[in-house]
Length: 217
Image (tube, rainbow, N blue to C red; front, side):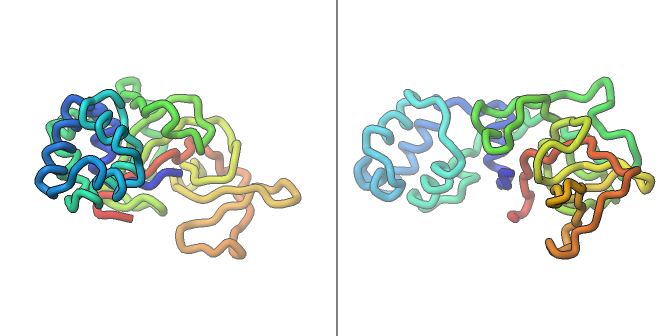
């Protein structure tokens, strides 16, 4: 599950900042850093042709790992590399509360679209919703002010973190199957050896697909 900082969230979820804006910024920062294309390419681990493509906008998107390496090579924060008004266009996140139902059951809930391949490791093809803990609410694996992409589900499908609905309300937990096929639950402060069987009354209703930290994870 990708765990990413806020600036990259603005890049992929907001306006998906187009390269006509990012390309010139890369060039500007490269010049400020007194680097030619070849020198920057060596620092980032790509060819100088790739740098040219980035700066011209011929390559439409840059992956998160490359963006982090690029910011490091340019000697600037990732936020400065990506800064523009895309943050103002970030979809309003849904409030996650401890009491059911899950927030995407709101008829006015807006889905988000992530770039193709971004969730490849999660094997997810369904809908995505952007959520954040409601004021005063606390959840394992999701800090105050953090954002997360959740996919609605009807049942457990693979090891990972899930939004679970039970007798005590909604909560987030790590789920996996035991060798005997039993569904095991663990919380943020639970060790693997302390995982316990999920109560029969507890039902996974959403899979945590991606997590963006406000202050770094």
